[in-house]
Image (tube, rainbow, N blue to C red):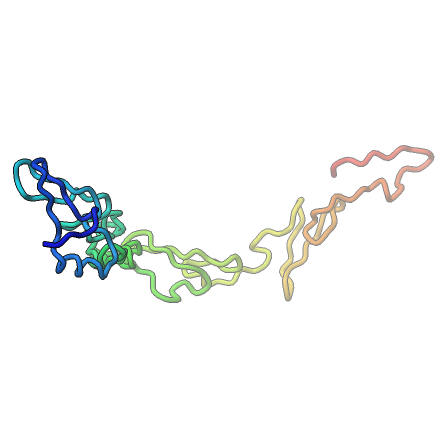
Length: 203
């Protein structure tokens, strides 16, 4: 055995010091780590030691970062650490049949590319989906173009007429604007005669 850095030593109750061999150190030095990436523990009355690892490290010398310790695989997926030493944070998820994705987060359902013609597909269960349509479309597959008046754009009792393109609102007398959104101040029309005072009501 050879003498090495202090953090590779375990001091035993009887004063015995265990030092790691140069072969093992050369193997570990390629990762540039300290031996026993945790707390070195001795066994009473024995010339043996073990490493008490700090989370998330594992291995006899706590030399392996356990990427699965944070449970990244969802929905029952099984995690397998890539075993890349203390700096490797990669893992693989083995997903159940109904899920996919790096972390098993995506449900495999009935959604197919472009199944919702003018919208986005969302799986509700393994056998059902719903289309979230763009604003101008409706229908179970977002296949129906809404006519402008289907969106009920006219306010304050205005009547909508579909035109090409777009729509027009026929507004009640008290309102104006493209969507009948502006209340007309009827007093500006000077309808009161002989000194009468005009009070504009809401309508």
